[in-house]
Length: 108
Image (cartoon, rainbow, N blue to C red; front, side, top):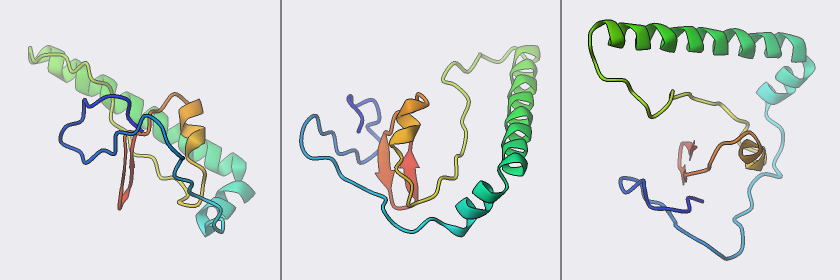
């Protein structure tokens, strides 16, 4: 969970100690099975989409600069679709912070 209260607009359970809320353990989704069976195709898809996203934001930053608009320093927003039965702790290993769990998923 978040260790600070920088997200006052979100209903965050700010816990510093206590038992973890365990998730996962369910069946693997059909999409995850397809992605696992077709690792090369899935990897190529993810690589292509991330390159498109990177290009989009480079162009957007250049447009803002050309129009004398201020630089946005907060980072690049992304949407990750993750198997609901997966243990999301692997995201922490990728450098993401789990900010909040909501009905539709997680804010990271």
